[in-house]
Image (tube, rainbow, N blue to C red; front, side, top):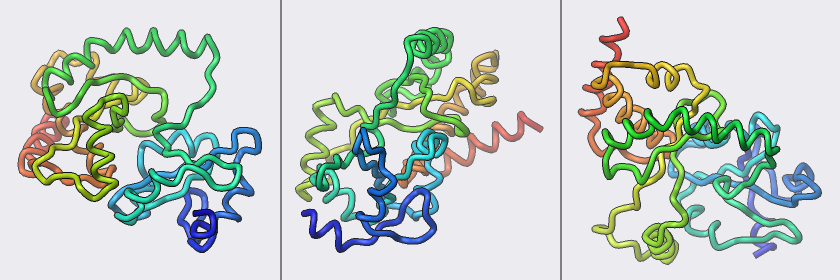
Length: 232
């Protein structure tokens, strides 16, 4: 497996040109020894712009950008390269002080009302709605519920190329950025119809960034137009 990785050329978050794995690890944290990657069936530019990478950009951490469909099958099965651990960005852990954790808990509590409104509007389309500190510029992103047994089964069958067509993908967690202007305004909005429309539009926005197809494009456009009309 190491030899195969060394033969490949990778797009990365911090590079405009493809590089090999040996060059990439020269800039990996010498203590953590973790190689992060993101996968998605979309363009390299779309993946680089993914909200899920905002915290990595802020910290100057490079990430492998994998946009081939085969990558989503192969890479979850490749866990190591030499002394380095290969890790999907969703599994990355960033150190936080006790003060930061306490502050996050207080913020999350203050947004419980909006999170419930979003969940009530979206129903089974999402597992839950929660605040996150991983976003910088974007209002929302999706997070896979890796503790869900249905998710584990779906991913295992997908990696084996056996995911049945009629087996729905497990609902994701919708994460909201409490420091984003749009989310702050929705938190204080008395217009329930606006909040409901925004919940669906933001969910679809997050899906598009993840390279997913929208379930109902017409509905997305109608809701977006309603929001724009209220803003004029």
